[in-house]
Length: 151
Image 1 (cartoon, rainbow, N blue to C red):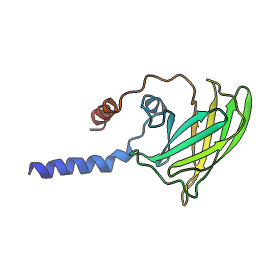
Image 2 (cartoon, helix red, strand yellow):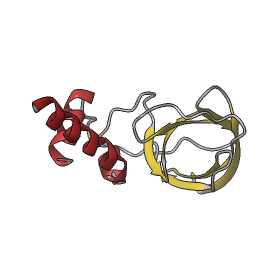
Image 3 (cartoon, rainbow, N blue to C red):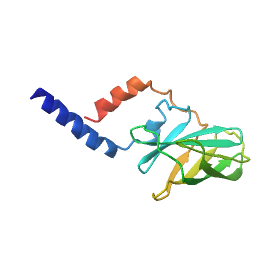
Image 4 (cartoon, rainbow, N blue to C red):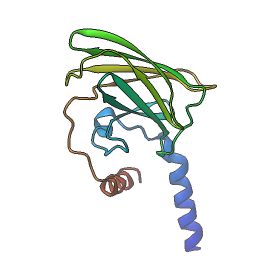
């Protein structure tokens, strides 16, 4: 009987988990796999990693599993240093989109992503990738906090 109750509890959490939305402020406290800034966009998480003249976006589902980007298309509008740049994003690796352009690495920079995955509607996410963020929580602490908040 205990096994059945445990199974039902786990099943109900698994079904309900995708409905929990995380705010940008919360996502800024999470240690990301590639050191970028993460945002929710529909059924996906986009992690934006910015380097000199290049943008890389890693796409995962809400469980953190990689999402294939083959056939995906995207653009990034970069607002930095008083300038506006448009960067075309193309598939580059299993779960990535990449693009390059001329922009300034500025702590006040803002980036707006528009990404369309095959068969899906376009998703948009806004980033402040170089802005100071709170210290990232270790993954174990994040999981513990999630368990605490989602029961």
